[in-house]
Length: 147
Image (cartoon, rainbow, N blue to C red; front, side, top):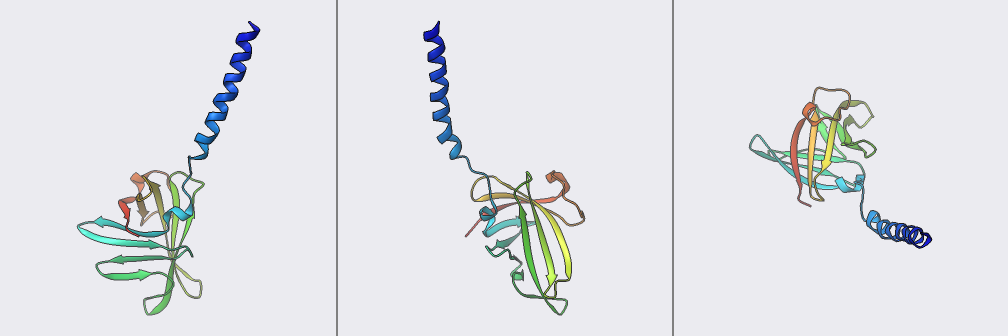
């Protein structure tokens, strides 16, 4: 009986030792995972979103660029930034378009769900002012990393 109990005890230790390396390879998405240029198709048009490491977002649709560190909006210099919240699932992203003096023009609530390293489901709530955790509440698009 003691022999069986000792074997069970040692088996539990070995199983634990085997599981520790396994779980160390499971990674959670972080803000750095979104950095890069992403492409998606919406209503037959291909667009691009570029998230840079400094927190700026540049969008390109129909050959026109908007956002980044500096662009013109209604005759004034503006910028587009993003904030990534990895503490929620799916991930929450705020896109903030503001004038250089800090006045916020608009904040867009977004969701992101990585479906691999180079694919992301991305949702934008154009009318909502609070985050939801359901993609049904957002206009969604599948983005593919191109850079």
